[in-house]
Length: 351
Image (cartoon, rainbow, N blue to C red; front, side, top):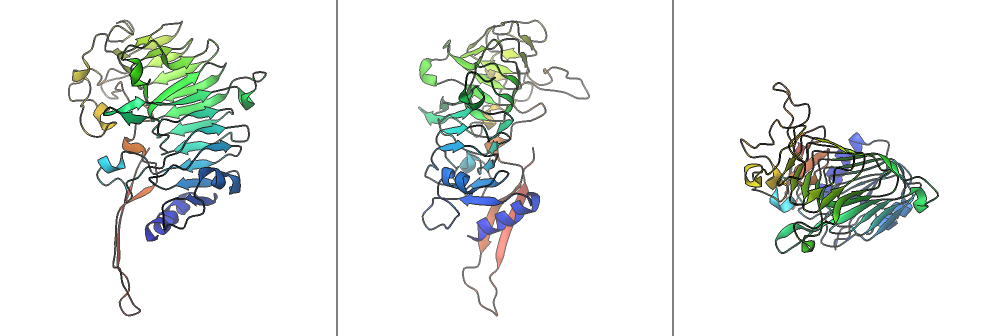
């Protein structure tokens, strides 16, 4: 309990205007709620819901309020000094309806489940969408679907959506949408379809305009129209030009060709470090052809291809930008003459 209390003091200091609700369904932990939907129902627009790590799911969510939903991240047991608690906060399917415009979701483990967006102005950052199988952490990706506003085809598609720094996601944006930023994600399709499936891991409609940059695209097809595609690394799969502007991308095959700074037939063993946690494995190794190969790169300001460069570099384990307690120890018994001694180590996580 002391860990959570201390965390909330720190968090309140940087979010003084928003009420914070704790959600925890672990046995013996007293929190505000045990499911995400109940927390949403009680919260007011502008509030923050903190999902604490658990072995159990926090259920589904149908959202009609503008909220900030924050989990502890993922792969925490693989990252030294990540958090005191090593469990992620798993959720099932989420739907953001009108009223939820302005919602931010960070550090949550969708574990193969989906997110449907029926409203504008949504930010989805630092979440894990996939669930593992056959020793592949990307085996079953979850899907983000961008829909019509209010799920009504008489309305336009959603706009002003940021999808950034997520692990293991498929993106469907076939409705007429605009101002869609897809950056610094690990994007994939279900592995049981094979490495060269023609199913789309990013599927965009002819009237959907996207900026797709600094992603790792792992298998399947990028099928978008009239969009800008830069600084991505594609491992297997395919790309359809479709009047897109594409430059400074790297392909394991001939997906992007060799014009406009694109590179073809690059051996991925020369690109990635391939060690550490599943997301750390996509760091660039020394001498990688992706180093300094990004659009606009200069000697004084190098820009790399891949997820660890650009304006929103990927953050390992989905840790959110707030103080993180990574060590907690306390004397179990105390008295008026012998106060309980507490030793806490805190570090900041940026970006």
